[in-house]
Amino acid sequence: MIFMSKQRGIGIVKIIALIPMVLIGLVILAFILTLLNKAYWDYRVRQMCEKDGGVHVYEVIPVTVDEAELLGRVSGYLTLGPRSKVRADAPAYTQDKISTQSFFSLRIDRHERIVIRSSDQKTVGKVISYARVGGDFPDGISAPSSYSCPEIPRYYKDQERFFTMINGEIK
Image (cartoon, rainbow, N blue to C red; front, side, top):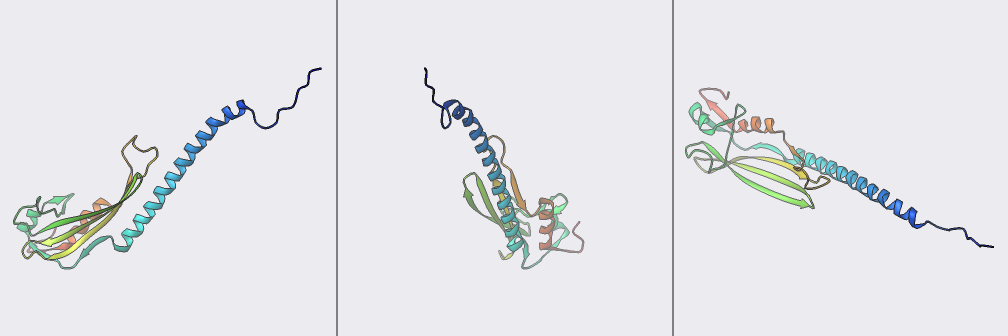
């Protein structure tokens, strides 16, 4: 008589079959955690923008129509640029300060653009924006996603608040 014992526990075949299921589950879990992390940081960027983001005008610069043309336009709005990119006789220029915090493949940027009047080098205001870049899964396969504030068209429109026209209108 042959004695056969009942197998207890899980066998090798079941373990081998379970390994791909566990790996797929881990990939799905990583994907979900990545989406939640990006949503959290998008929320935090939105909070930071509401707290101190946007255009802060300390003093308005009066400009003539000719001076306004020296500044240039983006999407029809007067725009500002760094000292190295604007003409020497432009009424204002900007200085940028960018601070970055990195968390693995995710980066949070704070971009502060200080507006300086050319005639007396006085700071007349600043523009602050925040952005989340990256944090995607899988990382490195495509370009990183991003979220920022304020929206780009509003950003250029709001920069016109630094100027008031003499003998004309901002068009």
